[in-house]
Length: 147
Image (cartoon, rainbow, N blue to C red):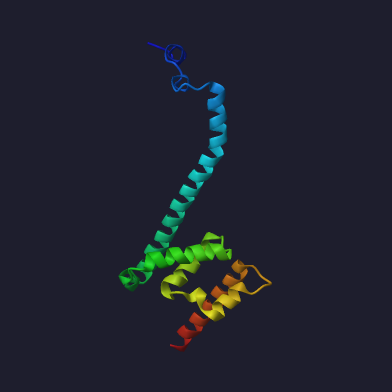
């Protein structure tokens, strides 16, 4: 039975087989690792974002099965997710609420009164969006009381 150390002695290094020296190989690996790590992180992030948006879509359809008939729903949610991130929303709970609103009210954040409120200076987008959610919740409660 061979030990790992003896394998290293009998099998030439892949670096040597490729015709480059250890120093050049290490320099290449050191230079390319951050780029590869960044690329891999972007791919993972993109994959996670897609899964997040798909999960919100599925949740919205569970809450309102009529949304399942909308062939544009996933695309709309993906666009809204990108727009929300670009506006500055970072917390997952707020992003989820943002997407749930988009599912129910397409383009809600593009309506002039909403976009002006969200973009108004003086508070963060997350604070302003939380305020908007509070107002919508109060309005929904009032509507329930009237019925």
